[in-house]
Length: 153
Image 1 (cartoon, rainbow, N blue to C red):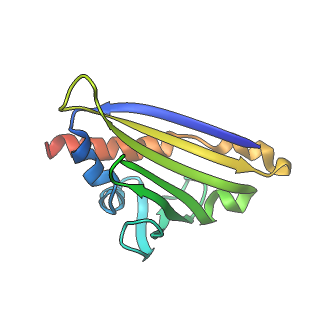
Image 2: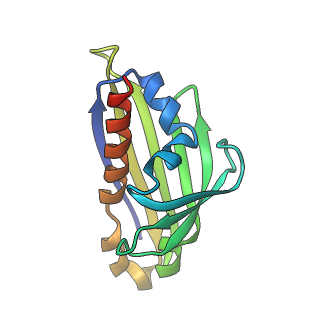
């Protein structure tokens, strides 16, 4: 079973400024203690192939998961990560991918659109677990990031 969820939000900062946060390891550092308990770089420097171990706060469903940056496109401002250990993979998912896209607002140069997409695939015998997929934790992450971007504007 394959599924997808997406959300879009506008933030009043230029796209390049938002990408300087979303396209790097800075985003992980920013959300430690707020959305996540810890973010540890297992390998890499923030480019494709980078692997992070994300330790979640109690009550978020999983103790941790590892994600790999599969795409970091600085020109088009797109970053994709896939869970490679723990998390959703432990409950029957074969794919859990997160994509962040930053686009300059066509109307206002001092504003950008942020799009979040989750793509997942779950084995049929675990199809009921698809109901656990939600954008809420990532929207929390985006909220923290956007507050930071607006304050540093």
